[in-house]
Length: 347
Image: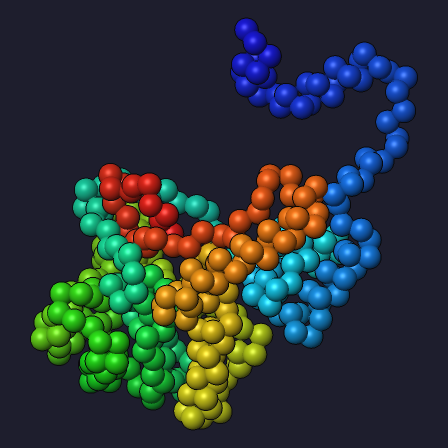
């Protein structure tokens, strides 16, 4: 059999085989010398410059992908974001911001009772997701409630509100005003939510029917057995991910002094999230750029800057001409297994 097949059967990497073979054939070879530095590698001065930028006051709380995208929009290319990560790793400056438990990965059960038709968005204002999260008040037991309606395709917060209680009437008012503000037509939109009391309220259901908006809810946790119940995936991921981004912000307070403090901080957060946060799921574009159709023009400008960088140092791009991350063309909630096509599907 061939060498490749033999290595696969034995579970041995081909590289390990060749290294061992070379040691046996050349036992006198001096292997203590370090690997030579490639000509395309960043110089030490350039690495120091990149590290200073990443640790500077402006970007000290941003990830390398965020820094790469923001600098590229300003016409500056230092290196790839992978090189930025490698530079930080060399100084042991890469880690999870918060210590988190690592839970085991559960396989999604393939049971007919759990199958559900996927919800698809191919443009803004086709699929919204909304949820409510608690914000801790000045004293223990006091909470404020943040209502957020998120466009799934662009991740843009089309509507939000901070209130002192979780109320069906407030949810009704927010949904109605947001649909009017975005100019939603009948049969255009589907609104997805979990199964909280405000989400399942009869008044909200009647409003959506009057507006011609379809409604969708996460699957109930009840299932055939306890183990399957634990394996039901989160069906409202976009709202939950947006809440996590908010609560992991460096300036997110432990408690809010009053309701107005919560509203003021949230207003500033959404200003940053919409216009400055380069979202990984959006090809490192901001939600506002995708929601208002500016992403294509920005991507073309990024491509031009990358081509200039490639012309200056082509040896540093071992995979050929660099291209910016692709823009989303389709976003699913619960994609059906049999209907995933060649589209760019983002989760």
